[in-house]
Length: 203
Image (cartoon, rainbow, N blue to C red; front, top):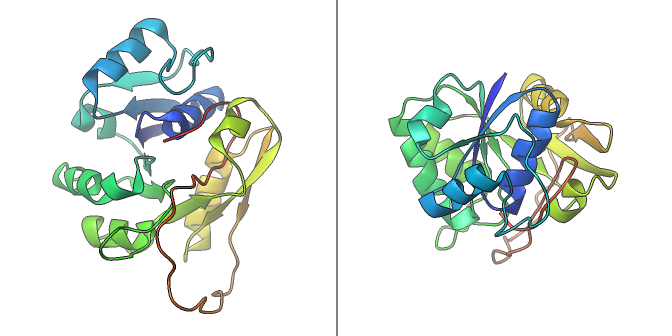
């Protein structure tokens, strides 16, 4: 399956590498052309993951539409405050890929969750949320870890669970029943959530 990973920070790079190692057609896009050119020429994200080589199967794409073309899944691994803008571009490209949020935090101003932002921007009723407990640096080094793929639709969550699982990373489903209301939302945080096996830090 072709998977479009949007965001070339440590987390996006880690996810793309993980997916490629799992046999998927992983394409990674970022909004800084010079960083992408360096990644392609050196096959390494020296800015965020120095010393860690990209799997040969990771395709670095400078054009968003080319990254999205034919993709069955699109992973949003951009910083939380960039999710709405990137999602608007994805919507303009008329992508029908299953959206997955790998960004953590709340949108400043609206205090909306990333799943809510994707819902509004894409018209996607049920984006899958990929969350910790894990960090990109643990996954990038192959340290055993676990993550949760959660969605209202268990079939969608299960598809992402299968996509992201590996010998070092256990990806499980979210709760089958709605969680109790946690009360007022807290201010956004900069902590990264993660999930999957083998390298990196940052998004």
